[in-house]
Amino acid sequence: MLKNSRSLLFAILSCIAVCAQQAGQVPSPKEGDYVIHDFHFKSGETLPELRLHYATFGSPARDANGRISNAVLLLHGTTGSGAQFLVPQFAGVLFGPGQLLDITRYYVILVDNIGHGKSSKPSDGMRARFPQYDYDDMVALQHELLENGLGVNHLRLILGTSMGCMHSWVWGETYPDFADALMPLACQPVAIAGRNRIWRKMVMDAIRDDPEWKGGEYTTQPRAAMEVAAAMFQIASGSALQLQKNFPTREATDKADDEFSKRFIAAHDANDLLYALNASRNYDPSPQLKKITAHVMFVNSADDFINPPELGIAEREIKRVKNGRFVLLPMSDQTHGHGTHTWPITWQQYLEELLKSSQP
Image (tube, rainbow, N blue to C red; front, side, top):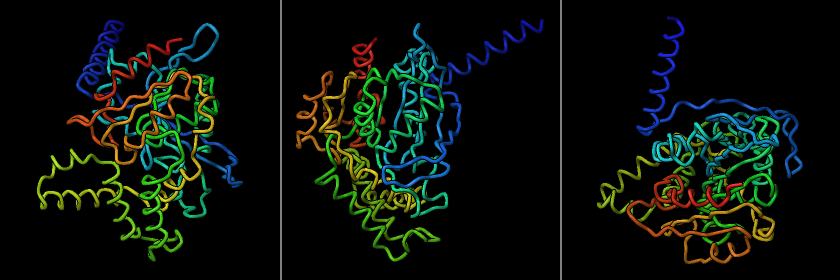
């Protein structure tokens, strides 16, 4: 009787989990922290103890040679965290039963990068004395977490959005045999310059020039600087079409802008923001794109303020990637500007193609 009761309980719990996934929800991931001692940054600085927070779904599987065969690494954007992939429009489209990244088949790994989320960051206490990390450091730490923290020696896929998109290019060049496939979403594989650099510099300058920043030793957030940051992030990450459609009057726009600014300031720290933006200062994968051997599906959207299609950079650079393809999503009611990267309903068909073409 006890055995039958346990079987019934397991069946009920399994049904609850499946139904939750089908309703656009997923079970809570397993969370953990990996501590790295005496990490040496490219700047020459070190941290005696560095914490990387992560979350996982599913379990790792190995092939006949002992290599992990089903691990998927998802990399978030600037100021974000792994939690961005738990929103219904992402998890509900990709993680459910039979979906492309079904968490009963794949070992899905979400990382909070250094300076972000629940990982070590300036606002933990060091403030402006925190090491000046860059994208190479961030990717090296991701690799350290996978190999030594989680025992993952191979990735089926790296999917990165915005900053994570740029990290995926660095991954492909630095560890060319580690992943079967890369899916960079919403970035360019070149140094950050032009308008993209200008809006970032505007935010960084606003923070540094605000008297209330006090060299990073503030006790309350530098309000004027954070208001500038909020405005720039709203413009840079949004879609002109969606904003016009959602806020067609001056009154509606002003109200929405005020509400966005309040939410942004409440959710961000000035030092963390400054460091996160500055980490892109020396990013430039373009000279080494030929080193990438993984299959690459590179996707941008036509309404992306940060990566405007008229530059023609993506079309030019993808020609240097051996197994690369670039897709430009046309602007539509389903795209969301730069933020389209977190709406897989717009690009999941290309993920499906990538998984098929890169099958070992």
